[in-house]
Image 1 (cartoon, one colour):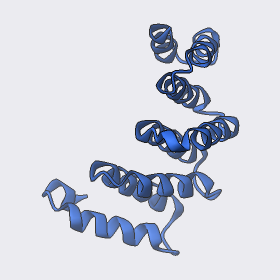
Image 2: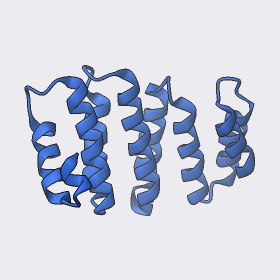
Image 3: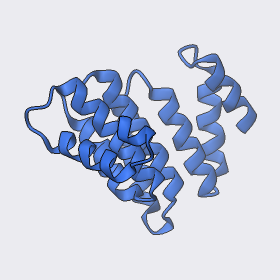
Length: 151
């Protein structure tokens, strides 16, 4: 991303959008370009557009499984950041769905569910989620430590 290094974000965004919308781009290139485009949208406070791109990446079965789950995690984090009180139930359902479909980054997504529960003042649910993460042998040590701190 030479244009990005030069500070030409609009040109960078334009190129990434072309790749994102291209039907002929190799899936690996397209998935990485899509993640980068979503990150640029996040930086420019276009969170809803970023979420849509994360969803599209996650739903594209031709992309690498890890990239798909990373997009799901980033989408979950973005939903938690937005914290739209009027869509709390919808957000909770979306986070549950993302978590249920995840295998590689499941506990990182669970962490986002716990943070969201805290933001909703559902401390009992948050505690339960963080306890499950901290006690699960499949959780990374870093994630266990963060979960322990949330308790």
